[in-house]
Image: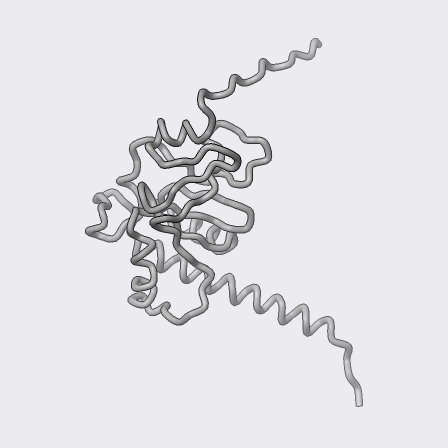
Length: 188
């Protein structure tokens, strides 16, 4: 049986930054890695990957989601980053040490390769990729530009805070168990 080598993929015109600019209308920098400006078309909730995975299991309808190393980035409506501290207080998570931050105006995130276009050892990857014309479906507070079909930012943040807290408690419990099992037994 003869072995056939597939034809090489043709590179897409203009590279990843151009794809983000032309297909999605997002502000993107050229270079390596491509960076996407936050606070213009979207903001980002940044949390640990273990907490983010739990959020994705519990919340079926989110905006685009990217994974970068051990961090998960959930895209939300622009303006959401400035609402996060007050929202966490309102949800009674204020003062709790949560591993959740938000990137908004003036920030940037590393861009995963465009959906369906593999990168060479990408620093980031899309778990739930963006699609052209879907900014209205980013999680938003009522009055921040979300549509009736958009996921609810309050529920998303509450779920993210809960899962960040659970992940922190789990990590602490594991560390305590490791310390306890590494201690020699003391007999008097």
